[in-house]
Image 1: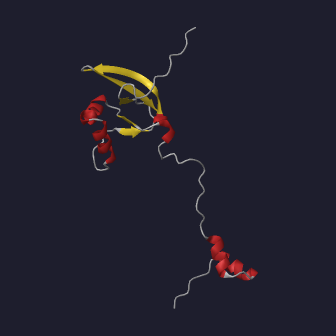
Image 2: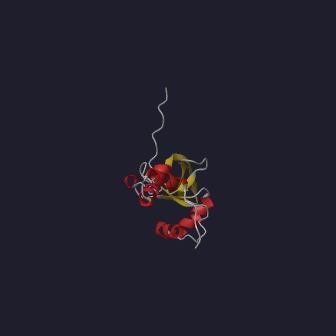
Image 3: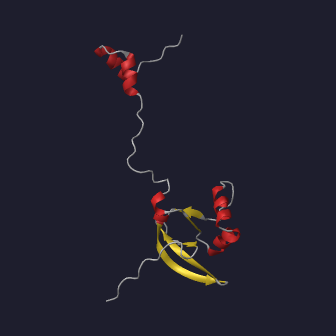
Length: 134
């Protein structure tokens, strides 16, 4: 029979007259309490996510078959997402650029945590009012 050394907590408990089961119960890890809302879950109050890409060419390729097909493509973890992602609307800071290419308009939205804007469908995100001039 192999003997295992007793931990310091068990030795102290035995010296104080506590049972080993009480010590083990005290040492059981506790589940972490939630400090706030889960930031990885999309914010349902802000509406559905927006599909965006840092490259306009990649955005056009991804959206070629429509938004539903693009969403299905992004949901596939094995697919090449071309740098594109479904962005929570709370991550979008506003429209920073616009372009019209081949008769189709596109907006480029600023995204928190990055300096690169992401190309999205026009009108998806409301534009912030222009600052008042003095």
